[in-house]
Structures are given as structure tokens and as C-alpha cells.
Length: 196
Image 1 (cartoon, rainbow, N blue to C red):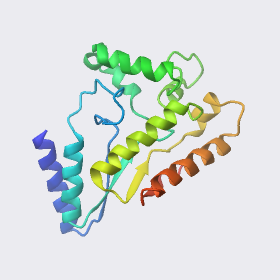
Image 2: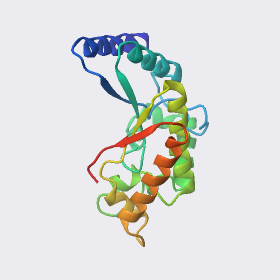
Image 3: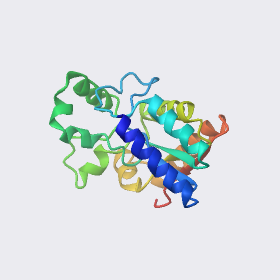
């Protein structure tokens, strides 16, 4: 892990040298303190590593925006392709929790474009929304970020499938407003992809 930190720090230092001042850093594959069900990741990063990178970035006048999962591509389904990860009992337990609580779409869906649905959070699942907000809180606490970048790219196909009886725009707006209000309570801004 220390090698990854050194490479990240070198990149931040280079950014600062060339007057780059914004770094969006993925944070969806960390062990999250407030979400014990998110276990079994083959993480090379820890929350302490993320905090160290954020502090280093601030020291070099680079604003770090941690990227957290939103209603779109969560990236967790891809872990199932890693046979070593997928074979672990804690990994299977985590995936089972995601499916049982309808946090993600149905991974066994036979519908066209099923991969979209099973890699995206279900906006009608209270557990999914709670998980997203807890992950966000953990990342804000670790980094001291003033802006978080929530992954919201291309959510319409997933929303249309998982909540077919509602207008996807309405569901999306509800989530955005709830998320923004949640982070604003902590003095943090929300940023997201614009491709809705």
C-alpha cells in the first residue's frame, strides 16, 4: 500500500507544480467503519490512507473531492468477476446482503441490459439510501472534504427498471435533494456527473 500512497503523493505534487487544484479520487472500495456489512473487499486502501492523501493534497493546495457511490454504477458487481474475492465467505455474505435488501438490482435478471440494473443502487430501497449516506459520512469524516462527488452517471435505465411505476426524473430529483440536504448539514457541497 505504501507504494500506492507514494505514487498518489507524487501525482499531487506534480499537479501543484502545474497549478492543478482539483483531484477527484474514488473511494467506493474502502472498508467503511459505519457499514460493517461491507466486508470482504481486497482493499489496498484504508480510511487512514485516504485521510493522509487528503491532508497531503491540502498541504499542496489541491482540493480533493472523494468520489462516492450514488444511484448509478456502484462498481461492486465487477468484484464477482474476481474469483478469489467472490469465493470468500464474507464476500458471499456481503453480496447476499445487497441482494436481500434490494440494495442493488436483481443480479439474475433476464431483462435486456441487466448488467445496468444489478450494478446500480435501488432508489426505492431504504437500505440502499442509508448505505450511500453512511459511506458518504465515513468519507467526509476521513478526508475533511468540503465537496463530495457522488456517482450519478446514466441512472435512468436503472431507475426505470427498479421503480417502473414512477417517473425516473422524479425519483432522481428526490435522491439528489435528499443527498444534498444530508451533506449540506455537514457544511459539505455535492457534485455529480451531468449526464442524466
